[in-house]
Length: 115
Picture 1 (tube, helix red, strand yellow):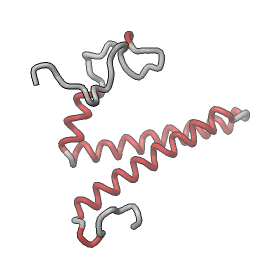
Picture 2 (picture 1 turned 180 degrees about the vertical axis):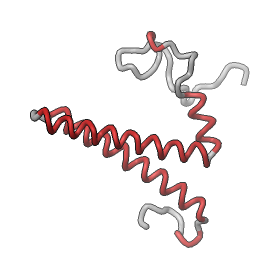
Picture 3 (picture 1 turned 120 degrees about the vertical axis):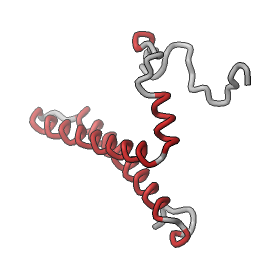
C-alpha cells in the first residue's frame, strides 16, 4: 500500500478503485514501452512476432483501463472527448514529431482570449 499518499483506511472504495485503474493504466503503458524496446532490437523474426502480439495486447489492456476511467469519472470523459480524435486537428499539419499541429501547443499556462 505504499502507493497511497493518504491513510488507506480513510479512503473510500471509489477512491481505491480509481487508484487501481490509474496504477493498472500506468503498468500497461510501461509494459507497452518495454515490449516496444524489445521489438526494436529483436533479431529473430518469430520472436519479434510474439513480442508484437504481446505489445498489442498491452495496448488493448491500457484502452480497457481508459474506458473504465471514462465511464466512472466524467472529467476524464470530458477532457478526452475534447482532445482525442478531434476533427478540428488536421492530421496532415502535424509537426515532424507527429505530436501536435505546427504552431500549436498544449496551452498550459496560456490564457484564453476573452477570459
